Image (tube, rainbow, N blue to C red; front, side, top):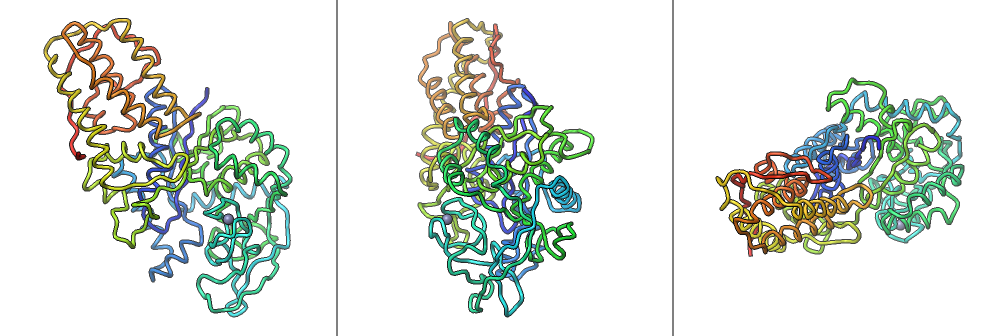
Length: 511
Ligand SMILES: [Zn+2]
């Protein structure tokens, strides 16, 4: 198997990450990458921030600040929050000329190879200001689910909604001004032209797609696929390098694949590789396994449109898995800074050890459906299922410190192999699930906690305890860093002896 490429697409650079972001794609991607490395897999993990959506413009106007300033500040906040939560990407995308160049080159290639078409497309238009309204600039009803929102990716149903198809469009900046529809020629990627290849691709992916993604794909494929605009007649974004579309910009939501290529190239360079063509890590002949982690509402842009671009270009690996997640709520409400909640990982990490945060977000993460965060439940669950059992296990194990090398029996090696397998089932990319990993961790820790240990089987106990900590390390990063001598997770445990050592304790949590 080739290299594992882990991509967690960056959030819009208009604010910090809240716990919902962390509990979804970012913690998952980090844990997946850490586990893969511990099992000896060559892995690159790229994430960052996305700087070109016009949501940055609308948020900046609301805050009375320059969008260029807002996106830089947001990038710093996101990076600090990831660090506070122990999420350590190799590559982190920021907006610079190299990024813009990667994006332009990607679309120049799609254009030169004949995959883009000129199409007259209708957009909401403000005659009073002469502005076309796209994505964050316009609100209305979703023509698929009737939900109220902006154009682009619908947060409710996941479909991509062309600005010109919104029901009752109004300007988000000037809601009082009349809006009309006006046509403009833009370049599009006609997704329908890739139907056959997309159908075959999603049939291969069907066994591992999570239900919401599977449903979206089914709904999309049941109707004609849209002409996806690659250029837009607005002025925020990377200027489109095409003679046919003077003054237009590249549509930020189509940057998905170029952004991912860039993120992985940065990751490779951060791990010591010589800078070069950003596409080489994705070359199909190198057989990388590309795994994406994102919220379900980004599925259209990455899984459908992104894959269509890869199919059009050819020669690049197609994503092997999309690990999607749902919304995470705070006190049964949407995460909201305005309600004064502890909402960022940084705020919470200032009060709670980050291993507890990582464990609890994993245990309650929105893998398959909406889930809920409350601070009281976090304290109780961490106390009862993690901190207290671990500290009892550590105390029991330390009774044998100083006894020298203890023998490990075949039965213990066999138990270790099964434990390694259980963690791999949860943390391998194919069926990755943070909640499954947290469940396995809780079960295995509980088993060690209940076990009576005597001098005769102390070696077996220590052997399984040591393997447990290695398997739990992708979640409990600080405990593992303080408590492990060797971090590699062997598929077939071979240890014949083990030497007891002092172990760290966990603090925090409550009853
Ligand atoms: Zn909708």
